[in-house]
Amino acid sequence: PDVRPQKVVIIGGGISGLSAAYYVQNIAEKAGLPIELSLLEKDGRLGGKIDTLHRDDFIIERGPDSFLARKWPVIELSQELGLNKYWVATGPQAKQTFVVHHKKMHPLPPGLMLGIPTQWTPFLKTGLISPLGKARAALDLILPKRKETGDESLGHFLERRLGREVVGQMAEPLLSGIYAGDAYDLSIQATFPQFQQLEQKYTSLIKGMMISKQRMQQTSRLPAMAQKSMFLSFQGGLSTLVKALASGLKRAQLRTQTAVKGLHKNESGYRLQLNDGQTLEADALILATPAFVTAQLLEEPELRQLLAPIRYVSVANVVLTFNQEDINVPLEGSGFVVPKKEGYTMTACTWTSSKWPHTAPEGKVLMRVYVGRAGQEDIVKQDDEHILSIVQQELRELTGLNAQPLFYEVNRWFQSMPQYQVGHVERLEQLTYKLNMSHPGLFLCGAGYRGVGIPDCIGQAKQAAQNLLAYLTK
Ligand code: FAD
Image (cartoon, rainbow, N blue to C red):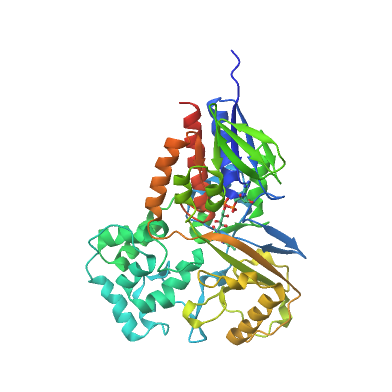
């Protein structure tokens, strides 16, 4: 007898939604399960936060610029899509990053792993930390481990092990930069659970990091390029991945400019209300939208209460391009980070064309300055000229750079950086449990839940796709 194809809908066309659609399509095909697949995206283009602009032979990333190479989901997906031949590694200058300390540039000592020292000699030599601060960090070797194994903030955890100075000067600017967050507000279990595990296993975080670094180097099966370069991107920019996913979705209907306005459960499945007044039926679906959008779409107050508090911070970045000959100062390393207590508006700056040589034509320079973080979001609302003038003034103060850019772009990302607050992991457990009970066949994935980076978004999407197919075939 004819089997009616199952209707599967993916909401959201960022990297999470696109990967989810890709895996649903492929797993269903392998299982011989007929499905009718649609992906609905509110904006006029696919990719969400991933947005590469090609202008005057520059490759400009408005959002993310690379991915962490040691994470498997993105490596596997790149390989499956045949994109590994387009991988680009960082240039030699990427190895050195600077940090602003008392308004001056200091090189971060070699051997830092996620801001944690894993080599003693360079750490003991650095002028970034006072002798007392170094002695305090070394106490990590003998301080007992925490007895409770529940969640705590990333900042408290690091301060407990390494002392306030190492946290403020090295660990916090690097780690909370990833989330544009406040380390004392972020959950250790949701951001860097491995730190907590290392403390439980080795007592000392530094010792644990040293051992795990060695193990990682010995046992890595990653492709050579991913072993050499901490981060990777693609020759044509990150939208290479978006384009390949979209063209790989041969049997799916990809609908841009289609926002889901309402979602209702009925006897046979779900009915979606779209912005153009149409409705769409689904037997199963994946919501790959930001948590605050998902909170609005789900009707049950209990689910809303779990989703709505997942807070997102607004950030912006300013892309500046120059003629090499106009640059009057040496651009050392890959750029620098600015700890909060230094009192600047900018949070970090990347000499993009030094770190990623493929992004600028010969004789030109590309850089990107970041503004906005938890507690300092107002700047994002200012107009372009205002943001530019602050950035230029601070660049002048910190580096002496006073060249005029060829052109610039201000990229604003309102409510874009999820903050995994203390208790986040438990919140997700409750959410998953309640959702399974109340909304069978409906799954969530995306940056708001189990990892903000591109690889983690892909990993979550694959898991959601597997769960959805298991549901349809049970
Ligand atoms: P999104 O990309 O936000 O996609 C969600 C999609 O849902 C959007 O396209 C949205 O339009 C759509 N949508 C919303 N509402 C509806 C609706 N009602 N109906 C239909 N569609 C809807 N990660 C890295 O790994 N490396 C980096 O270098 C890096 N740098 C970053 C720099 C910046 C400035 C930012 C903002 C993030 C960065 N990240 C980085 C994080 C990473 O880019 C994001 O977490 C990730 O791309 C999010 O993907 P997503 O698909 O979960 O969400």
